Image 1 (cartoon, protein in one colour):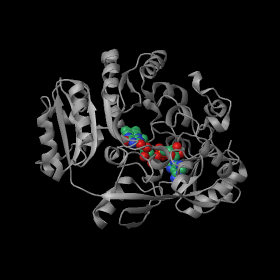
Image 2: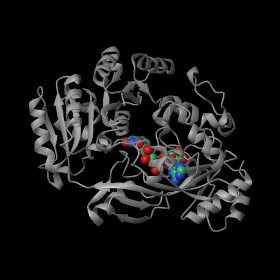
Image 3: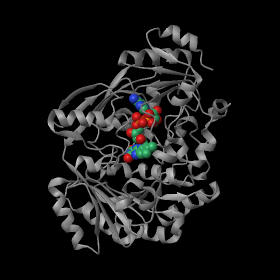
Length: 470
Ligand code: FAD
């Protein structure tokens, strides 16, 4: 157990909360999306929450926790869906949401504190100079930029810009190390890979410098198609049409969209497979022309001519996409869960067709088109009708056997869910930045158990978890 009195005496200027309800609330993220992790992790809780409001607070908190041997799990808004922010070994949650300053905006870049909410950055950048973040998760209205860099991968904007893994989509990060005297390091270029998508295991991000792109008026559009194949082919064509500026491009199979998107239902048809897109206003006519060339695309919904009053109460279209599709399905049918897959170029559409013909209604297609290694291809976030954990594992195996890459969202480690394999650079850097292994313990298998057999298919159960779950 954490000696909270000792921490409080070492950190007199910081707010430290140990009320069980608040600590439990701050120990949760969207882990419950997975029925497997809901069962495994529901008791996980930290011992206290330390609220940081400045770089100095972060440095002081890390030094005090290092000295006392207290594990530290950083937290932005807690919207991660790979349970990245859950404190498997107890200890302290380091809440960074109070470090929400936007420090500077200039042509092509923004510098912000890690707790800055992405939508707030977009609002300021738009007002300042007609710019916006190139990429954001569909949780942009709540998620922090630090949490996105440390726990996310891409999302809205990835159809044009690729993902956070791609060079150029993060400019610079400043991190604090977990040592007796924490150092502040500025990372750029290849060094960014040491801490991006590392779930906070390799240092606490205290400043993010991110690229901005031009902000456009985005039109939300939904087209309907008679078949999944036609919808996917149109999404591919629109994705590859580089002259048509777009920010989001997704396919949702029938009847999921109709059944799970109640606020858009009056525009949808139950039998239609839909393509959802965000198109820049000046490219809207071109996108419609492209749709008219294809097989029987029906324009079901568009905000192009809608008034503010007509749009009231309607979520933005990106809030029907990425993991919001799953969230909306879960709200209607709690037996739904999901997978995250990648269908590699150039066989992506044939693989999608093969997989969905195999599973039928048990696995409903949801595709997110992106640029991946420069090619337009698609991730899958299929909606899976959950029966048993054994069947879920079998469904994953079948996907892999058929040729899809699966980022298993029913695991909580970097290797099994996020990164899929040990990243040697991240592992080596951890030795420097967190020599005692106190940052978010249990999330990096390679650190805890270098001999772990990744091919075993079993869930990696961090040994501290038993203690934390008590
Ligand atoms: P948190 O959940 O608080 O943290 C995420 C990870 O980063 C944790 O491991 C945490 O320990 C670590 N961390 C947080 N702050 C720091 C810091 N300052 N320094 C070091 N480590 C830190 N993700 C996508 O990439 N794209 C999507 O489109 C997307 N859509 C989503 C939709 C829904 C409905 C949900 C529930 C999740 C979605 N996610 C998506 C996942 C998540 O919302 C995003 O990745 C989001 O950016 C995380 O930000 P956060 O502030 O909530 O981070």
